[in-house]
Image 1 (cartoon, rainbow, N blue to C red):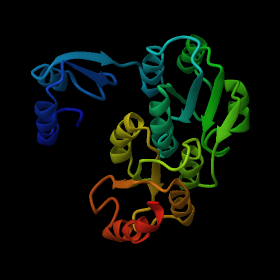
Image 2: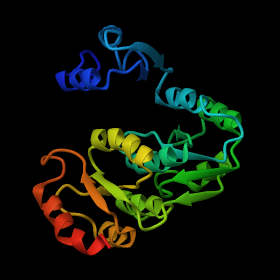
Image 3: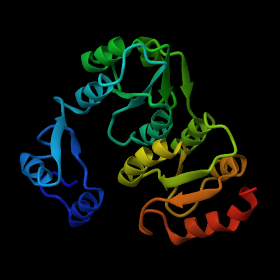
Image 4: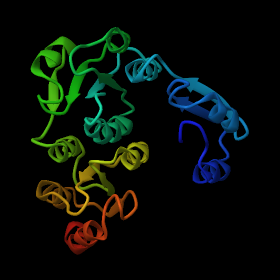
Length: 243
């Protein structure tokens, strides 16, 4: 949603879904009370919001049971959202939480979530430029899923899925909204979400798709986000993957 108003497309989706419950993620600055009131016409509304994105992520994570098998940690910094998107698909497929960490420290909100979850395994998403070795140690992390770029990290995350897969989703690695919405669907379908550049699919992503051999490939977003060239490139290789 936009902060101050429900978009007609969102209203149409809510009418089609006819939900019993709607959960707002974020505080009043992210999703205003005016939007909350508008949402209440479509179902019972609950808000999970904290002082900032780290607090909100922590509050969401605390809704998961204690003694979790695994928790994923991604950067919450502006411009470094990509790892959380691919990671959200993996976490969703496993019913696992994702928490966000600041660039320079593990704050009280994130630590409280980690203490609550008491996970058997803490997995960091992203390379050392995104989450530094010192942060890795402070988190008590067990391992890292990372590649040389955000696209390579999406490949590394997809390697947690056993090939072949029924399908996979491809989204922009530079514009977050499509992949954010798509990661929830990917988790539900137990499918990986891979990231692409705007005009071409990185070679390592194409190589991973060949290994995954997906029965279906879904491209998320309009042609300003991922161009027709990306769709054509995927279509050209798709018959070889589906086997």
